Length: 147
Image 1 (cartoon, helix red, strand yellow):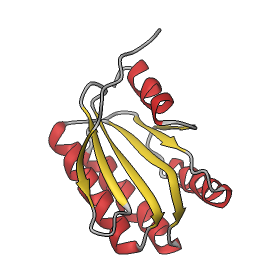
Image 2 (spheres, helix red, strand yellow; image 1 turned 30 degrees about the vertical axis):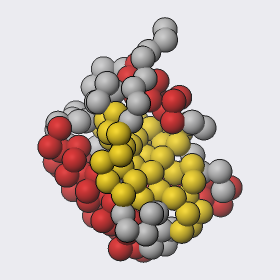
Image 3 (cartoon, one colour; image 1 turned 90 degrees about the vertical axis):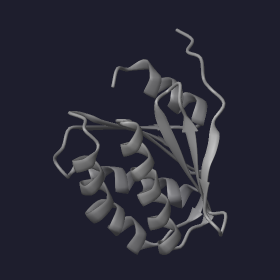
């Protein structure tokens, strides 16, 4: 089945240019893209903005694009698992949380991203996290299953 993919609109870009959020209205999701070396402040700002936008639209699926991520901090990843995920799962009203991750090109970051996903699954809420090589593949998967 071929699904129509929309042209995303940039709705947020941080000052450093290390994080962008795109709106994909047809797929009913936002895409957060981390770019280059992302410090903890920018990381947190981007994810909290992403959560506010998703909650305001009632979106229940997530698209994390780490394809251009070169480096993030261990503190950022710990904050993501310990603070962001519990907060987002409490505020996004979904019985089963689904997230698509566009894997980093950087092999080290790819391994770290997969470890973070394992940590997220350990939180105990029903969750499916799938990894993809492209945004279009990720969007196709998100759109192929009901929310």
